Length: 367
Image (cartoon, rainbow, N blue to C red; front, top):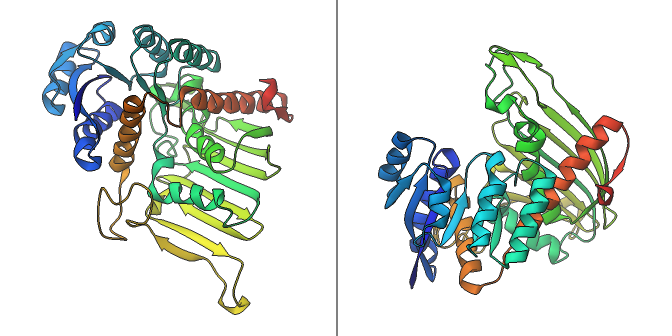
């Protein structure tokens, strides 16, 4: 096995998740590359040192340029605000270093396009951090669809709904300012990524995006609370999706239903260790959705646990993501989802916002 020095820009919620994942992934998956937590970057000396001590990094800095340029940092994870993504990624790619970047990739579609160009021009390993699609259950759903178990897909319904801003008296924060931090920039990308992974490219769409609580204690809301869209996939399937941060009662409503000519699939992240499968065979009286509990027979489950039904959790998704990133580096070959995949998600978000303003159908290829 070979050590690889990891630098993480940002030590907050996602920075911690990536640090924990990199500390654990070698033992869980027995990866050929074994991460060494080399350096963490935060905005102040105090927070940088606190993250270094808490997470086990060798060193800390308040300047991301120091982290990126350090020879001992051999791969960079970007877990800082979207407005910082492009500059950090471009600097890392200029040095040929692999980059794993949190979604949404960059503060705009134009930025993500530039980040893709930088990655591909450098020929460097690049990955966008979409973790929810990596659950064993959703990986299994992809297999079922690819293997034709439910036939040709005719319809997809997806949602990413949470209620962390459902209370209209909740104060204004950084989340209520700027398009990139709104529901379409923050939550929608996860389900759009799932739709692309499960069904394929989206050809056209019509969307409605809305701010429900325009004023909150401490400030005016400048981004969206929820949005809905209908779409047509390139394979002909119809689709409908809803995204919300004000969906009262929903805590992690990353859910989808897929209808095919021979069966159907249902999944809800709030019950992430189960998938529901309907197959149109056998006697009619015995047909119905079957609940399948994930276990060692499903993708990326066995390294965590030998017992079916025992389940995996949120942090395990990040560990699976870390494994994929390390395998890509070791093989010198990108693994899905790349920066280009992240850009495609941003393109659909831009199409949805354009459609909402125009109140009309939009072809995604026109964006």
